[in-house]
Image (cartoon, rainbow, N blue to C red):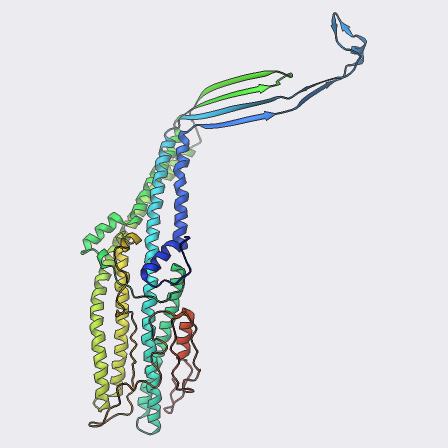
Length: 534
């Protein structure tokens, strides 16, 4: 933990390493593993003798005053009983020290079974720790990819909203001159409202992704680089995936060791019905026992046999209870095995489906881009309707979003297969490059997207220059795919108040980024000449 520093993870590998070191859930499980490991030392203590030492020190004082009769008879025969009838006092310091030991000779195999149970508990805790580690790494991958995917979706939605707002302004201007009808204005207003709803939903999803990223990895996302799938950890066939999962998944191992722990607990309880044999010894030395100067040394060795005869049915009841727990653990192990099998089959099929979806989405994106350009050109010559242009533009946006989601599912499903087969750990991942080329699906296209269809040009008329662009910068608030670290300027509430393009933000903090996206496209009503509101 001393090597951690409060920096921003840029690559997936750095994010995984940070989650592996600092995730509180994983560290709590590691602490639990350390506590469980001490059960072995506790169990082995039953084989060793128990030795204790004790010492005591006291003060004894005896003061005696003779009676008057004793004073009148100083001699009893030839013995002097009193001299002067003065009281006399006896003082001693009784003290002693001793050592005692107790050695277990036979306890009905309780200690032996306790040692075996402790080892099974440690193995189960180690397997559980590996399972929690895999779950944490998968959560980190999911959070990382979700931030990238939803950032790209927000970018696509923001470009769509900006382009439609620009087009709506131009359409209203043309409507004031009588070149278009209210229907044309209403069509764009409808598409703009839908685009704004899609944009708001994308921002809300991104906010949730940022919170999940911070919860799992521990920091806010910054400068994230696009990851790639770990295809090398995906078996070639479904049967091989299932076999590896059933053989290597740590959750199954933990469940099996849990069965061993429950079975051994039953044996430990049954050992209480067997005799116990022990050896006890002690050595004691004492001084001033009855008078000053006395001394005594004593030692003893005792063998003891304890045979239980009747306990009121307590051991039998606890034995039956433990047997039910063993049955429960076996059924739970079957359930875990079924869950892992289902996870392996599902994740492998999802990975194969995601590969096909990515390929299809790439074709869809290229075709949609070509269709938008062609339909826009045909519309300018009067061969297409405005609705066809808007449909084509929406198809292009949807194709882009489908590609992002397919790429996201491809990455996450590959790591899920690695988790199911028990190979999602930093040692395995260190063998592969986890960073994808910047030209991947998560890289946001910085080219301007414009729906500048007005004024329409007739056949033989010159067309606008290709670099004329939008009235406003359509990519100002979604120009990069990573989250930003600096505050960004907010634009005016009224989008018609200024035609100056907003300043391009630098690399960001999540909150400032989302705030800028929200302020860029306000949801306040904008009445138009058509009588409809946006």
